Length: 287
Ligand SMILES: C[S@@+](CC[C@H](N)C(=O)[O-])C[C@H]1O[C@@H](n2cnc3c(N)ncnc32)[C@H](O)[C@@H]1O
Image 1: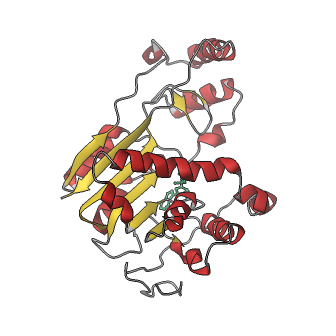
Image 2 (image 1 turned 90 degrees about the vertical axis):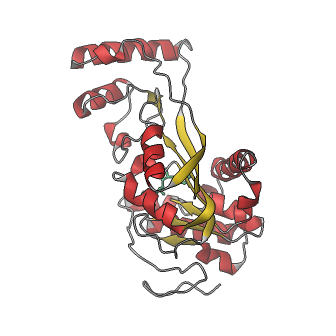
């Protein structure tokens, strides 16, 4: 494979091109902390990559395990822990993420794990709505916990389908908006509250509403409907999440949202309320 070059230059068999680059906007001291060996090699992050890989092996085993031989694309790859798992297995695997900071962290991951220099170029900066790869290239295009951060999912899913070869599989895992456990604030959840009542709910659990910024509603039926309209066949899918908070639809004032939040928080603290983080997952084959 060729090296990473200036935006717009075609450099690899996959038809690689550079597109948009977004810098993260968090305070500088926090940014620097994220690049230390300790932060990059945090056991929980390394474990995440392995867990995602094992999950993929297990589920693709039901469809066609062969697809894991690649080429593979990890859409919204973050710090590239899943990509690293694939590279360690000698696969033609790529990652793309819109944040430059994530890709810089991926390069540190390669450095700290003494990966070959060429691995540096396997995760790239790019916006999912214009993927920097040629059409019909990948056997497997997967995305882990990205789509709840994409306001207009159809355009990104279309790109995922475009770069997948016919017969290849698209895997989408994300938070289902109907969940009863919100993973960014780590609190019980009531789906589809108004923005104001959502803030009230989050605050009652002692969290800051900014933790939920950039999280959008997406559901399994929506993902399926988009994939089917793009000519894909659904081969594996998640169940619909069950709302755990009874009578939640009646909550429409600040006062009764606060009351319910306190009740649920007390139950949670006493261990009487069991969190259920229902994610959506869809495996779809491009026809
Ligand atoms: C919650 S992180 C998940 C990272 C990784 N997939 C994982 O499972 O650990 C979501 C990632 O999606 C990326 N992302 C969000 N929207 C994107 C887009 N339109 N194009 C590319 N990446 C995107 C974010 O920059 C972020 O790194």
